[in-house]
Image (cartoon, rainbow, N blue to C red):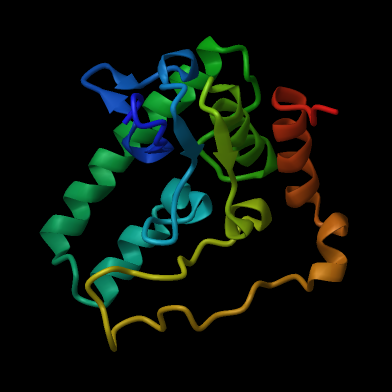
Length: 174
Protein backbone atom coordinates (compact mmCIF):
# COMPACT_ATOMS: atom_id res chain seq x y z
CA UNK A 1 0.00 0.00 0.00
CA UNK A 2 2.89 2.37 0.74
CA UNK A 3 4.39 1.85 -2.72
CA UNK A 4 0.99 2.57 -4.29
CA UNK A 5 0.54 5.61 -2.01
CA UNK A 6 -2.67 4.15 -0.58
CA UNK A 7 -3.68 4.87 2.98
CA UNK A 8 -4.72 2.22 5.44
CA UNK A 9 -7.57 2.69 7.88
CA UNK A 10 -6.65 2.58 11.57
CA UNK A 11 -9.42 2.48 14.17
CA UNK A 12 -8.54 3.14 17.81
CA UNK A 13 -10.55 0.18 19.12
CA UNK A 14 -8.50 -2.27 17.06
CA UNK A 15 -5.04 -0.75 17.53
CA UNK A 16 -4.02 -3.12 20.30
CA UNK A 17 -1.35 -5.65 21.02
CA UNK A 18 -1.21 -8.27 23.74
CA UNK A 19 0.03 -5.55 26.10
CA UNK A 20 -2.86 -3.18 25.41
CA UNK A 21 -3.50 -0.21 23.15
CA UNK A 22 -0.70 0.79 20.82
CA UNK A 23 0.77 4.23 21.61
CA UNK A 24 0.04 6.83 18.94
CA UNK A 25 3.68 7.21 17.87
CA UNK A 26 3.60 3.56 16.72
CA UNK A 27 0.64 4.03 14.38
CA UNK A 28 1.56 4.10 10.68
CA UNK A 29 2.01 7.31 8.72
CA UNK A 30 0.21 5.96 5.66
CA UNK A 31 -3.20 5.78 7.26
CA UNK A 32 -6.44 7.49 8.13
CA UNK A 33 -6.59 7.41 11.93
CA UNK A 34 -9.92 7.57 13.75
CA UNK A 35 -11.68 6.47 16.92
CA UNK A 36 -14.39 4.46 15.17
CA UNK A 37 -16.38 4.09 11.98
CA UNK A 38 -20.02 3.93 10.97
CA UNK A 39 -19.87 0.16 11.58
CA UNK A 40 -18.37 0.33 15.08
CA UNK A 41 -19.65 1.58 18.39
CA UNK A 42 -19.49 5.27 19.05
CA UNK A 43 -16.94 6.23 21.68
CA UNK A 44 -19.68 6.94 24.24
CA UNK A 45 -21.31 3.58 23.47
CA UNK A 46 -18.00 1.74 23.69
CA UNK A 47 -16.86 3.48 26.89
CA UNK A 48 -20.17 2.96 28.73
CA UNK A 49 -20.81 -0.53 27.35
CA UNK A 50 -24.23 0.48 26.06
CA UNK A 51 -23.26 -1.10 22.72
CA UNK A 52 -22.98 -4.47 24.49
CA UNK A 53 -26.33 -3.94 26.22
CA UNK A 54 -27.97 -3.18 22.86
CA UNK A 55 -26.46 -6.23 21.18
CA UNK A 56 -27.76 -8.39 24.04
CA UNK A 57 -31.21 -6.77 23.85
CA UNK A 58 -31.55 -7.39 20.09
CA UNK A 59 -30.24 -10.95 20.32
CA UNK A 60 -26.73 -10.62 18.90
CA UNK A 61 -25.31 -11.71 22.27
CA UNK A 62 -26.78 -14.15 24.74
CA UNK A 63 -26.36 -13.39 28.45
CA UNK A 64 -23.13 -15.36 28.71
CA UNK A 65 -21.66 -13.72 25.61
CA UNK A 66 -22.64 -10.24 26.80
CA UNK A 67 -21.12 -10.87 30.23
CA UNK A 68 -17.89 -11.99 28.57
CA UNK A 69 -17.86 -8.86 26.42
CA UNK A 70 -18.42 -6.67 29.49
CA UNK A 71 -15.42 -8.24 31.25
CA UNK A 72 -13.27 -7.81 28.16
CA UNK A 73 -14.41 -4.19 27.78
CA UNK A 74 -13.57 -3.40 31.39
CA UNK A 75 -10.01 -4.62 30.74
CA UNK A 76 -9.81 -2.67 27.47
CA UNK A 77 -11.05 0.51 29.14
CA UNK A 78 -8.44 0.16 31.86
CA UNK A 79 -5.76 -0.39 29.21
CA UNK A 80 -6.91 2.80 27.47
CA UNK A 81 -6.84 4.72 30.76
CA UNK A 82 -3.35 3.36 31.49
CA UNK A 83 -2.08 4.49 28.08
CA UNK A 84 -3.62 7.94 28.47
CA UNK A 85 -2.13 8.24 31.97
CA UNK A 86 1.30 7.28 30.59
CA UNK A 87 0.91 10.11 28.08
CA UNK A 88 0.14 12.60 30.87
CA UNK A 89 -3.49 12.91 29.84
CA UNK A 90 -4.93 13.29 33.30
CA UNK A 91 -8.53 13.39 34.43
CA UNK A 92 -9.68 10.40 32.39
CA UNK A 93 -11.94 8.17 34.43
CA UNK A 94 -14.11 5.11 33.98
CA UNK A 95 -17.06 7.46 33.49
CA UNK A 96 -17.63 8.85 30.03
CA UNK A 97 -17.30 12.63 29.95
CA UNK A 98 -15.78 15.49 27.95
CA UNK A 99 -12.31 14.87 29.38
CA UNK A 100 -12.33 11.22 28.37
CA UNK A 101 -13.75 11.94 24.92
CA UNK A 102 -11.23 14.70 24.27
CA UNK A 103 -8.33 12.55 25.51
CA UNK A 104 -9.14 9.65 23.19
CA UNK A 105 -9.45 12.04 20.24
CA UNK A 106 -6.20 13.73 21.27
CA UNK A 107 -4.50 10.31 21.25
CA UNK A 108 -5.73 9.67 17.70
CA UNK A 109 -4.72 13.19 16.63
CA UNK A 110 -1.20 12.58 18.02
CA UNK A 111 -0.59 9.74 15.58
CA UNK A 112 1.75 10.38 12.68
CA UNK A 113 -1.00 9.19 10.34
CA UNK A 114 -1.45 11.49 7.36
CA UNK A 115 -5.14 11.92 8.04
CA UNK A 116 -7.23 11.90 11.20
CA UNK A 117 -11.02 11.90 11.24
CA UNK A 118 -13.71 12.25 13.89
CA UNK A 119 -17.33 11.17 13.69
CA UNK A 120 -19.99 13.73 14.49
CA UNK A 121 -21.60 11.26 16.90
CA UNK A 122 -18.35 11.10 18.85
CA UNK A 123 -17.96 14.87 18.86
CA UNK A 124 -21.38 15.09 20.51
CA UNK A 125 -21.11 12.14 22.89
CA UNK A 126 -23.87 10.14 21.21
CA UNK A 127 -24.00 6.58 22.56
CA UNK A 128 -26.02 4.87 19.79
CA UNK A 129 -24.34 3.85 16.58
CA UNK A 130 -25.62 4.58 13.09
CA UNK A 131 -25.36 1.03 11.80
CA UNK A 132 -25.02 -2.40 13.37
CA UNK A 133 -23.66 -4.78 10.73
CA UNK A 134 -25.63 -7.99 10.38
CA UNK A 135 -28.95 -6.44 11.39
CA UNK A 136 -31.94 -5.57 9.27
CA UNK A 137 -35.03 -5.22 11.46
CA UNK A 138 -33.39 -5.39 14.89
CA UNK A 139 -31.90 -1.88 14.77
CA UNK A 140 -32.97 1.30 12.94
CA UNK A 141 -29.81 1.50 10.82
CA UNK A 142 -29.13 4.88 9.24
CA UNK A 143 -32.37 6.37 10.59
CA UNK A 144 -31.51 8.55 13.54
CA UNK A 145 -30.76 12.22 13.64
CA UNK A 146 -28.06 13.99 15.58
CA UNK A 147 -29.25 15.53 18.87
CA UNK A 148 -27.89 18.98 18.04
CA UNK A 149 -28.78 21.11 15.01
CA UNK A 150 -25.74 22.11 12.97
CA UNK A 151 -26.30 25.76 13.90
CA UNK A 152 -25.82 24.87 17.59
CA UNK A 153 -22.72 22.67 17.34
CA UNK A 154 -20.35 25.29 18.68
CA UNK A 155 -22.48 25.61 21.83
CA UNK A 156 -21.96 21.92 22.67
CA UNK A 157 -19.35 21.55 25.43
CA UNK A 158 -18.39 18.06 24.25
CA UNK A 159 -17.94 19.29 20.68
CA UNK A 160 -15.79 22.20 21.83
CA UNK A 161 -13.58 20.07 24.08
CA UNK A 162 -12.91 17.48 21.40
CA UNK A 163 -12.29 19.99 18.62
CA UNK A 164 -9.87 21.89 20.86
CA UNK A 165 -7.94 18.69 21.61
CA UNK A 166 -7.71 17.82 17.91
CA UNK A 167 -6.65 21.34 16.92
CA UNK A 168 -3.93 21.40 19.58
CA UNK A 169 -2.41 18.22 18.12
CA UNK A 170 -3.08 18.97 14.46
CA UNK A 171 -3.13 22.72 13.95
CA UNK A 172 -4.31 24.01 10.61
CA UNK A 173 -1.38 24.66 8.35
CA UNK A 174 -1.47 27.78 6.19
